Length: 295
Length: 330
Image (tube, rainbow over all chains, first blue to last red; front, side, top):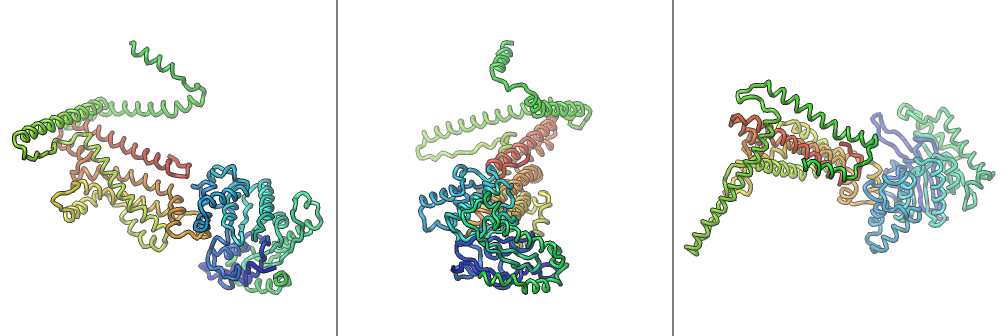
C-alpha cells in the first residue's frame, strides 16, 4: 500500500509566559490511501494538535507533514476538517453552508448546475436532503454534524480530518452517526483521521487505532491494527471475541497511562523539567517500534 | 349616543381572542400597566405643575401642553397656507410680466417664512440621519479593520478611548470654525449650520459603533475562522462571507447606541449653535419668554423623547430583520 500521508517526526512547542511548552514530541505516522485511523488518548494529550498540524492550522516546530509527496504548509480544502462543534455558519442554511465550500473548491471547474447537483448529492449522502434549506439553529445537533460532514465531503478531500466529530452528541445519535459514517466510508473509501475519546467508536470505525501518551511531550504510545471484517455491525460485534480483545487493549492502554504517576496530564508548566525525561522514556518504548513496523 | 352604539357594535362584531388567563395576563402587562403608569405620571405632573410659579407664569401642566400641541399644529397649517398664497401670487405676477414682455425670464423666489415646529422636526430628523449615516460609513469599516488587526487595535484604542467621552458642546466651536474656514463656496449646496450639526453628531456617535464593531469582529468563533482558512477564502471574501455576518449582531448593537447618542447630541448642538432644528426651537421659545413658552418647550421635550424612542424601535426592527441571531433582547 502506498503512503498517502506522512506525519514525519513532528515536535510541537507553544510559547508560554514561562518559556516554551512542548505539546508533541516526535510524532511519527504514515497513513495509506483509504485508511481509517483513529487517534485516541486522554484529554489534553495533544490529539487535536496533531490534527491541526495535519490540517495546516498549526505549523510544527520540527518535522513536517507530507501529503501526496508535497509538504503541508497551510490549510486547504484537500484536508477538509469536520470540527467538534460543527462550525456551520449560523446565518446560512445547510445548503448554503455546503455551497460556500463547493463554490470555493469547484467554482472554476464546474457549472452551476453541476455544483447544485453536487451539493444536493452530498447532503443526500448524509441524509440531510429533507432539511437542506434549514438554518443550523433550526436543526438538531446530530443534523448539524451531518451537514458539517457533508461540507467536508463536498470538498472531495484527499484526507478527511475529524476532530471528535460525535463528541457533543447523545449516545443514540452518536451510534446513528457512526453507522452513517461507516456507510459513507464504504461507498467513498476516504482516507480519514478521526480523534475520539470513545473506545467503542475507535474500534468500530477504525482500520488502525493510534494511542497517544499523556502530555506534555505527548507522542504515539501504541498502534493497534483492527482486523475486523467490514461491514461491521455493532450488535454482532458486541459478542465478538476479537472485538472485545481490541477494546480491552485500548482500555488497558488508556488506564495504564492514566494511573501512571510519572506521566503528568495537567499542570504542564510546573512539570516542565520532567518533560524531556518523559519524552525520552516514551521514545525508547518498544511501542514506538510498532509505529515503524506499521509504516 | 348613536355613534357610541355603533362603535360598540363594531367592537363586538370583531372576534375577540378568548379571554383566558394568559390573554388577560398579557393584556394587563402590555396595556393596563403602562396606561396606569402614564396616568399616575400625568396626575403627579399636573399636581406638581400647579405648585411651581415661574416668572413666565405657572409651570405648564398636561392640559396646557396639549393645548400648545394643537396651537403648534395650527401655526403650521397657517404657515403652509401663507406659503401657498405666496407662490400663487408670484406665479400670477410672473405670468403677467411674461405676457407683457415675452423676453422676460421669470425669477422664482423661495418663501422665507419662519420654520414651523413640524419643519424643525423634519430638519432635526434629516440632520441626525445624515450625521449618523456618515458615522456608519466611517465607523464600520474602521471597526472591522480594528477588529481584524490586533496591532491596529493597539494603535487606535487610546484615541478612541480619549475621544469617546467628549461632550458635543466641546466639539461644536471647533467644528464651527473649521467648517467656516473650509466650506466657503459662494453657492453652498447645504447650509453651514446643517454641516456643523451633522459633523458634531458624527464625531460623537462614531465611537460606540467603532468599539462594538471591533469587539464583534474580534470575537468571532475561532472555528469559523478555521473554516475560512481550510476553504482558503481570499481576504475580501473572508470579510464578506464570515466576518461581516458574524459581527452583524454587535454592529447593530453599536448602531443602536450610536443613534441614541446622535439624537441627544443633535438637540444640544442645535441649541448651542442656533442651527435649525428642535434644539433651536427650544432655545427660541426660551428667549421668547411668552406665557406659552414653557408649555411649548414641554411639548418639544415630549416630541424629542417620542422621536428618540421611535428611532430606537426602528433600529431594533431593522436589526431583527437583518440579523441571523434571533435572540435579540429589547
